[in-house]
Each structure stands twice: as structure tokens, then as C-alpha cells.
Image 1 (tube, rainbow, N blue to C red):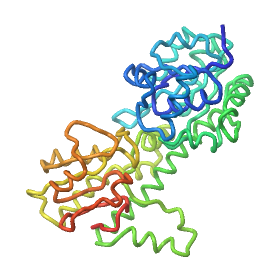
Image 2: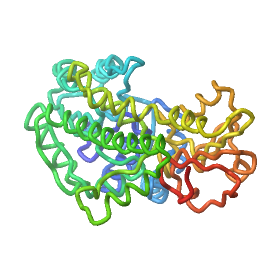
Image 3: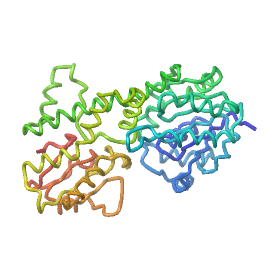
Image 4: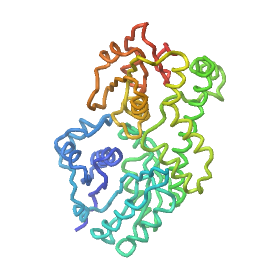
Amino acid sequence: MINKSEISIIGGSGHVGFPLGLVFSSSGFKVKLIDKNQKNNNLINSGVNPYLEEGSKKLLAKMLKLKRIFATKQLEHIKTSKFIIICLGTPIDNKLKPKIKDFLNFFHLLKKYINRDQIIIIRSSVYPGISEKVYKIIKNKNENLSYCPERIVQGKSLIELPKISQLIAGKNNKAINESANLFKKICKKIIKVSIIEAELVKLFSNAYRYVHFAISNQFFMICKNNNLNFFKIRDIMKDGYHRNAHIPLSGFTAGPCLLKDTMQLSSFFNNNFSLGHAAMKINQEMPEFIIKNLSKKIDLKGKTIGLLGLSFKGESDDIRDSLSIKLLKYLKRKKIKTFYSDEFYKMSGNLKKKDLIKKSNIIIICAPHKAYKKLHIPKDKIIIDVWGLRSKKI
């Protein structure tokens, strides 16, 4: 029997599904987090966050105590849920094309468990047209398909969900209206759009940000090649001139969404998204550029490089598509002795930041963790800061 106050989230132990489940459970729903990652499921059920998510520790403990949330890998648990929200990853392959086969195959499996009264909600970033393909797979069992994309900054879901607008699209009025009523419980504003509009808004948003960051990274490279300080020039650009107020800082622009969604958009546009490809080239080449630029100034033979930060962004433990990891691999190929440290992500070989500084000749701030901003680094060390986190830079 269907429970109107029950939600199943597929990919529920992931970075998108877990915080969404917490927010819905805190709004009175019973939430089932369904995920193949049994390690994360066990952590959640024992009250331990599987990764960093601001404000989630106390909320998880409270929801577990109230028995409003639990994690499982058993897909059949969806049978009693009114709402089924899909938060599966949609990666790209090594040719930068969307990998849609596994995503679509999942719905052939899901079809075995759903019934006509449930509301199926896709929340993943998808290649335009994928929602229509999903509908063709499940329509004989359920026609209530909606697309309600996630647009949250990772790690800030509990803060952002109540504040930002939620796009609602669907194949029929029931799917649209039921999904809208659901998200009204946790979101400030609902915007009803067509499915293709929702799919493109999601991809356009991430591609816009990716290109925006690439502009600053290109400016950073130009300054480096001319022994100029990009951060000083950026400050002058903004000073008393509002048109430049939103120019971003440079940095290792990466993570699981920006590049992927830019390339999904390019595939949709028959690989003619030249601006997106230019942005990818600039952003992805930042690690290699740093080392090549450095080698023009000093002989790296016999030097030791220390990498501060392995995650793809500051105050995060997520290394998916991290350019810090790409830099680490590049340095190993060049046979340059390298140490690494991170405030949140731990892997074999990690050093404490103070030990890394002591043992390294050159310090590269790869992720802008707050702990690095006022970290004491002796004057005889070379500091490379692509983020503008510190005042001492070369």
C-alpha cells in the first residue's frame, strides 16, 4: 500500500541524495535512502556522515532517533513510497560524451517495482532528451514522470534548498502538480517549465560557471607569463568599477558537475560548443601550466614539491575529478618528489600540513581550505597560490 508521506531516494547515500533526504525527513516525511554503497549506508544508519555536509550531523542524529530516515541497498523498498526520486550519477566517458546506457538500464530494473500511482522524479543532470527516453521505458507501468533538477552547491544543501527556486517539469499534470506540492515543503519558490527547458537550464548554468572560471584562469596564465600579479590586477579592475564586480578568482576549476555538464551540452550541440571546449582546455591545463611556468624560473631537479589540498574545492572532502589529483599524477610522471596533505580527505601517504611544509621546497596551494590562509610558511619556501588565498605569491 502506498504511503503518501514516504519518499524513496535512489542514490540516497550520495552527495545529492543524502542531504535531500535529510531535508525531506526534517519536513515530516519518512525517507528511504536506497544506494548500492553499503559502506555509506552503514555509516548513515549509525549516525555518521559519509562526507562533509554543513549542518547535517545533528540533523541526521535527530532524524534517526525519530525513525524518519534509513539507508538500504534493497530496491524493493520503493514499493510503498509515493515519491521515488532518482539521484544517480550521469558521468561522461573518456571521449567526453555522456554515458547514458547505465542510467537508462536502471529504469528497466526500476520498472519491475513501480506502480501507476507513484511519482517518479529525475533529479540527476541529464543529457537533453534522456527524460523522454526514460518515459518510453516506464510509461506502460507509470506515466507520472517529472524532472526536477538539483542546483545546489555541494556541501551547502541544507542551507540552500530552502532559499533557491526549484524547477518542476513533467510528462503530465499529475506529475507536475504532485512534484510541485512536494518541493513546496522544502523550497522557497517553484518554477514550472517544460522538460527540455529544465534540462537545458541545468546544463547552461554549469557551463556558464565553467566558462566564467576559465576567463579568470586565462587571465592568471597571462599574468604569470609576464611576471605580474593577477590578484592585484583583479582588485584594480573591481575598484570603483561595478561592471567587473563579479569576476571570479582563478583556481583549479573541477569537480563532478562543471566539466561533465559542459561536455553534455557540447554533445547536445553536436560538439559545436566551441566556448565550452576552450574553457575545458584552459581549466584542465592549469596544473601542467603551473609546473611549466615554475620550471622557467627555477631548476626543479632535486626539489621537493608539497601539495596542500587534494579535494576539488575548499572545505570539501570530495576528490572527484580533482585537478589536485591530476597535478599529483603529473608530478609523479615527471619523477619530481612530491608530498601531499589535505584537511578533510585522507589517503595513504598523507602528511600533516606542518610536516609537508618542513619537508618541501615548494608549496602549491591546490585547494583553498581556510586552514591554509594563515598557515605559517617560512620565507625560504616558494609558495604558489592559484586561488589568491594568501598575500605571498610568485
